Image 1: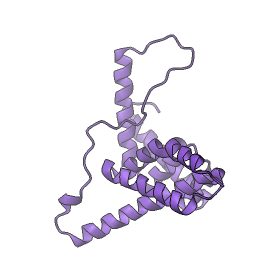
Image 2: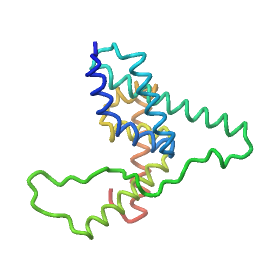
Image 3: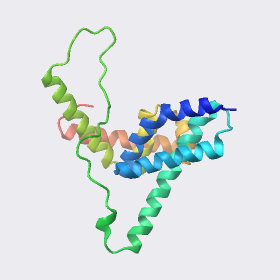
Length: 188
């Protein structure tokens, strides 16, 4: 059974990635913060007594469910109110990067030039834009598999679908990203 310290350490370790994943899904930083906080509270409240090894899978599933709940609430609000502009997501002003930092290969003495740094930042913005353009299920599967480093079985369990569906979503996401990046002159 997880101790308070183990639970706290786990939540600290997943906090940033969970926020990034949520921002990609809902495209609203405030809503993403709410979703992550709600997910963490549910994990602590309902599953804090589970073994530490089970926490990652439980948290991913809770995060997915909280995200789906947010979309359902948005759909309901949009259906009930005629002034939808009050509920549109805030546009991002470039503060959020796909990759938080760039780390050079260990032992490398090379410093990145300003030109390389700018080119890399532009490429990352293009990739981020294309990831956001993916359909929700493809984006979710892609981020879990390649961002969260979850295997197919874990991703399927977290998404509540079959392993075959995860493979299909990931394959389609990779194809769409590859096609979009090639069209922009980038080789993935």
